Structure formats: C-alpha cells, structure tokens
Amino acid sequence: MFDAAAHAAGLAPDPAAMLQDLAAGDSRMAALMELMQAQRGQPCNDLEAPDERDELIAEISARLDAAEARLTKMTRIARQLHEAGRSASLRLSRLAAALGACGLCWGDDPACLGCRGRGRPGMVRPDPQIRAELFGPQSSAREAAMHSH
Image (cartoon, rainbow, N blue to C red):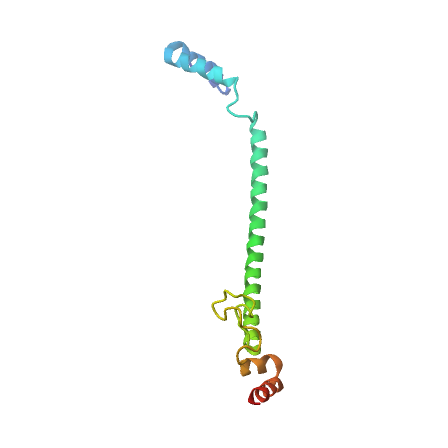
C-alpha cells in the first residue's frame, strides 16, 4: 500500500498509486474513485485554470476599488454641494429680510405657507439691521426716511 522504497529514496509517494491501493481494498473507495475520475474531466465552472480565476478576481477587485474611489469622491462633492446650497439659502433669506420679502419664496409661490405668494420685496418692513449689514448704514437711513413719510 505504501511505497517504502520511494520514501527511503526521499521521493514523495505518488498520490494516484496510493489511491489505487486504497480502492483495491475497499469497494466504497473504488466507487468514490470512479466518481472523482468522472468529475475530473468536467470543470466545476466556466474558468478552466486557477490563473484565469486569479485574473478575474484581480479585475473585479480593481473595479471595486475604482467604484469605491468614485463613491468617496461623489460623497465629498455631494457634501460640498449640500453645504453650498445651505449657505446660499441662508444668504437669500438674509437678503429677503433686508428687502422685506418672503425668505421662503420671494412671493413666487401661491402655496407658500409664509406669504401665500404675496411676499415680494417691500411687502413687509425690511429688517434695518440686516439691511445695514448688507447695504451699508446709509441704506437703512434712507429706508427709515421713506417709511416715515
């Protein structure tokens, strides 16, 4: 069953010969060997060689890395855009307050909960402090003079 001469010579035993010896002494092992030999001729998947699988894994890994890099970049851009939109919205709200307009729609939306579409500039008294911050103190003084007449 075991090739002692091959082992004594420092050679590794032949696995096929070892399996044949096992199959000769056990009918269940013989049936298993027949099944293994039948499957040996049929690849278990479309890839015929481990090298092809390694190449495919490397390609998929590279694609995944590239997709993760794009996702990271898109997430960063989305955060920047969100912050820019938030900042612009705050500036427009301050400008609307300085001009006496609705800070939500500027009077353009009849369904607006704040003004029902009537909040165009001058509709309400402008905020003098914000007006002075945005346009300078002279504009607030002119506005006060205009509203006092």
